[in-house]
Length: 281
Image (cartoon, rainbow, N blue to C red; front, side, top):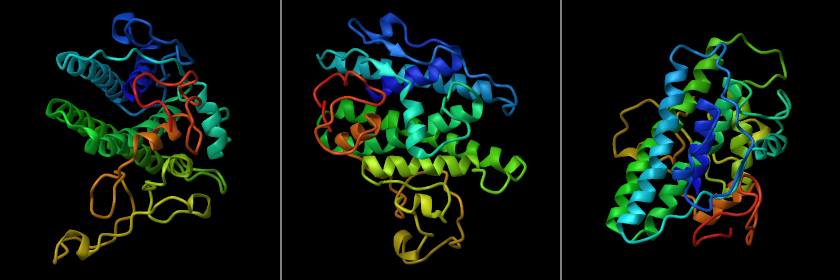
């Protein structure tokens, strides 16, 4: 379900259209929103290539999961109904007022913030699901996909840092891209388990609920520390031990349903719920 969501997001951003009927499978739900490729005016050189690569990666992830399930004698679930209008509501929750409504298909900077919504969630979701996987073939496929999702997440975070660094200092009170990403991180923390690393190690009061990764300490590495603990930026979302955070499937559903609590079955990006066995937060 998450890979369908990511594939639709990136394919729409790159091409203006999503999965083919063959890739979405018979009985697939409809996709609302998107339908317009992200305008790349002002984007860094090569940005279009990166966007196309990630879109193809996510399509391939959908196909890899379908193929793995089929090879084991199972039946892959079809794409559930997806509503990208949820970004606007998420923007309101995060306090993103400029631009408003939040629409990742409107500009390349908003696209990066939209991608930030998903990528850390994907990495933590695979870590959280791993203990429940009993098939070696499925675990291998999941580990391979998680590795690529982690590359994507680091690229998104790094891009936000670099664009801010290359931009003029904004007027007082105007949030930077990193500041907006941290607001999104705070929302994810509040509805989905709190396993977050903000993009800077000095969170403001607005993101005080987020789990902050402290500077590297010798006890977390070995008896000897090989680095000076002066880190001020985070290009990955992980624990002080450098292990990825884990979210349970239910916590992940809280995020994509944009609703905290147990027993939630619809909402957010999945207005009609999801497909498969685990359906409720």
